[in-house]
Image (cartoon, rainbow, N blue to C red; front, side, top):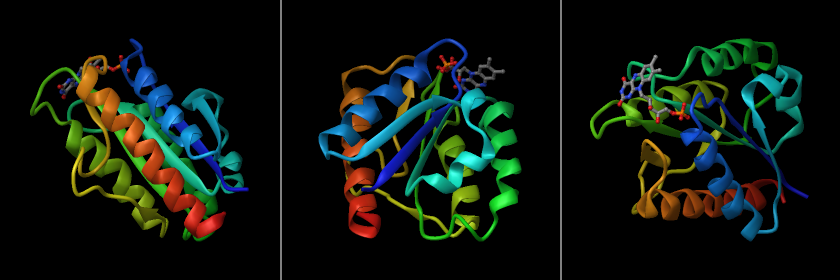
Length: 158
Ligand SMILES: Cc1cc2nc3c(=O)[nH]c(=O)nc-3n(C[C@H](O)[C@H](O)[C@H](O)COP(=O)(O)O)c2cc1C
């Protein structure tokens, strides 16, 4: 059975709320999911999942250091994460505050691993974004994203 990791850093809870909304979407597709704070994820865990979705608050237009640290440590498995499904999400304070650049920065690392990234022709194109805590719009897009990533993971690894 396909298994997804949702891994996030969140200082004030907004990105955490997004993580659990994405989890809800994944569960709607009957895919197994672990949702963990980045401090509880060991780099060795990454190889055990078919899909990895990484979330961070937007810090100066990029991911928080805690998230970047895991991404940098993932070099231990360079070449071994190929063809897993990848995804990213972010909460920022402002519209135009850099949430999309944060998502793209995370996705860039996942693409370098050779992971398969899931965009969306409607909803949030690169991955869900929220201004502070998720409102109804962001909630919908988080759940939608969880479902989409879960479906793709099942197709590739189910
Ligand atoms: C160090 C730091 C840098 C930040 N940089 C940005 C930024 O560049 N753009 C922005 O819109 N918000 C920025 N913020 C605000 C956070 O991204 C925003 O409050 C987010 O919702 C926090 O998520 P969290 O509750 O998961 O910690 C920054 C916050 C901190 C603490």
